[in-house]
Image 1 (spheres, helix red, strand yellow):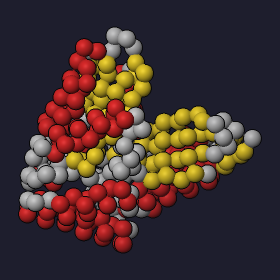
Image 2 (tube, rainbow, N blue to C red):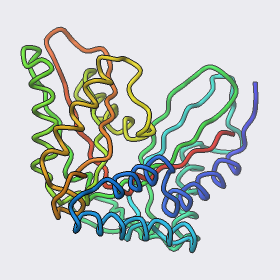
Image 3 (cartoon, rainbow, N blue to C red):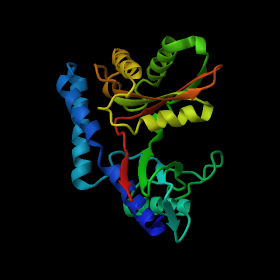
Image 4 (tube, rainbow, N blue to C red):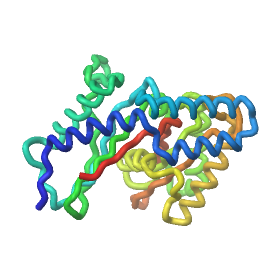
Length: 280
């Protein structure tokens, strides 16, 4: 049994909140550079260039990539041979968010009640997901999610008879309806299977996978490629100005489901597809 102190968890979350908001993962920035080189539409090419300038300024000057610094989603892989000591795991995570957003001068975007709309003033609470795994480690992934893109996400309980064609049509329709609202070029996280609640989590988890890594199942890998091609043919383009680059990637995650169901969720992320991880 390995002990991990809550103070170490708090400090890790504090730093991850700032790192995720300031430095874009390399797979995203590399894809944007590639798309900028290949984009034939001059206006779209210029917009992609501006996005890349913003990314570089944020990294060099340690400034937020976007004014919407997101609601913090925290994904944990907790080894079954780990014992959390000196306090509560959930409290430690929220304290890390509180400190990270204060120390990093990041915008507080969370309201305590969804209808009465009073700001919590420290961007807590975080949305926390924990998966128990083998081993004696704790992996923490912090993924701040802005709501310009979150608001464009959708879920549908398809019929099994809808099949692959129905699923793909729903995904493309969701992106088309979103248009320029989620600040394209976007990353499209897709969940297929499970239950009503599980499929939404699958879609969000799909956004954490590097966009240069396809699904390990060739069937879904081919589906990701086909969907990306269809989405980029919509012509929405960077920030809605047209062009070939509406999306950078489509990532699909799946889970077994009931014989009578075919749940599908689409969680859209803007080009600021932020996340950062650490292993304790």
